[in-house]
Every structure is written in C-alpha cells, then in structure tokens.
Length: 245
Length: 68
Image (cartoon, rainbow over all chains, first blue to last red; front, top):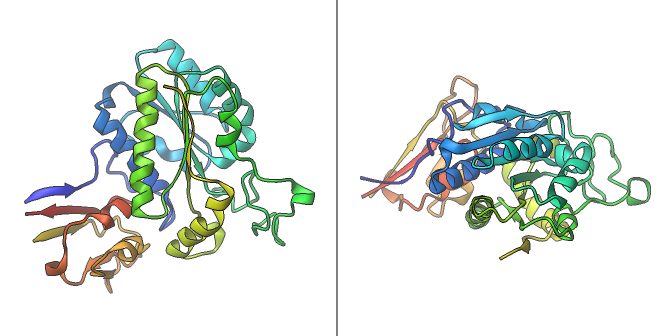
C-alpha cells in the first residue's frame, strides 16, 4: 500500500499540549511540511513565542530558541544576521505579535529582515485565560470585555498584515485560514512561499493564519471554525497583501 | 481500498476529522484513552476512499492514510 498521508518527521513524537480542536496543531504541521518539502531541516532555526505556542520548541525537529514575550522578531534578526545561511522563522500568536511585540514586528518588517514570521491570529489571549487582545473583534465577548468589545472604549482591532504591507521592507505578506481542508491547503502554499522568499534572500516574509480558540471562545471545535469563517474572515480578508517579485 | 491508521493514544477526540469526512465513516469511539478522551475510530473501513481530508484536518497529526 502506498502512503497517501502521514505525519512528517519534522514534528517530534511529543504529544501536543494544545486543547482539543485547537488549530495550532494544524499550523505546526503545515510549517513542518513546508520545511520538509524544501529540504531545509538541517539549517532551520525556529524562534518560539510566549503564549499558547510557548512549547513549540518541543514539537519541531529543528534548532529552536525561546524568546521573551513579543521579542521573537528581534531574536530572529540577531540569529539571521549572525548565521545568514540559516533559515530563521518565528512562530507567534496575536497577543505576542500584535500587542507587546508590535514594535519588534514593525521594525523587523520595515528593516526588511530576511526572516519568516508565522503569525497565528485567534482574536483572543489564549494561554492567560481569554482576555481581549488587540485583534479581538468589535462586539466579541472575552473575560475582559464581558459585554462585547466596545470600539468607543477599546478602539478597533488591528489588521496587522495590511498595516505591515504598507511598509517598503516586507517582500511577502499573506493572510490565510485553516477552517476547512481547502483553506488548509492554501495556507500551506503561502507558508511554503514565505520560506521560499527567505531562501531567495528577497527580504521579510510573514503569513498570518486565522485560527480558533474553542476553549476561550466557549465553543465546540467545529462550531469555533464556523464562527471563524462567518465573523473573522469579513474583518480580516484573506489573500496575498504584498508580494515583491 | 484505503486504510486509516489512527494513533488513538494521542487523539483528543475533537471530531474535526469526522466533520470533513465525505463518506461520514469516522465517529468517536466508546473507548477512553489514557488522557481521558474518546478517540476517533473508523466505522466502516471498506467505504474509505483515501482522500486524506481527515488527516489534513487533524490538529494532532494522529491519522495515517494508505491506499492501494
């Protein structure tokens, strides 16, 4: 029998600590498959964030490093400048990248650092218990916005991909989703393209992946993905936001 | 003929694979694994077409798909 699909060897056998139905696992797998298909396992360095994905270093069979909260792009900058032949990626959530790490990501992008950023946006702080994030949708209920996010009081969510795409530094910025199989396949193409951008030394690449948080949204896994499709995609339109040839 | 192999010990029973299965042959098992979850199981292997939608959807990479 021919193998149609099996777990890639770039992921370790450590069981993922994520909640049932959390799409972090899918996104880990897509990153691992992209590394596998490009044959860059031996020279890849990943930078893990603070947040739910803080243990990402246990799951990737590549060199991994842990950064302080939000500082993964700064650590990746140093890593890439010292080892320009290595492939460096960061894996960050929205609390990490869009809030405390907003300065680091903006400046790494505008400097055109030749790194790849995987930005997982689930519109909430997952690990700390479901507080409002910079990416929380207007009206969305979280533990710190129990009546729904009020833009008059808390402002509007940040569209990070569109914001960074206005800069001259980035070479590739795209937003994908993983709510169904078709979009998972599309997301994998984008992640692979981001790594190819780095390999070709074109500059900064980032893929934003819309993700769910069944536990803190208070929904079943499938219901959460349906909510993502119905509510997050209108707020965060999918597609390639910037691509330099 | 296609064959699914499920790592039942690492399955968390989220059921996302069952939702995307075009043949609807995946369901949560009555068994409980060591983590306390009901892992996913195949109800009728003969109907499997080996599309691997389940494996691509699985957040925990527990499904291996083989086809003749």
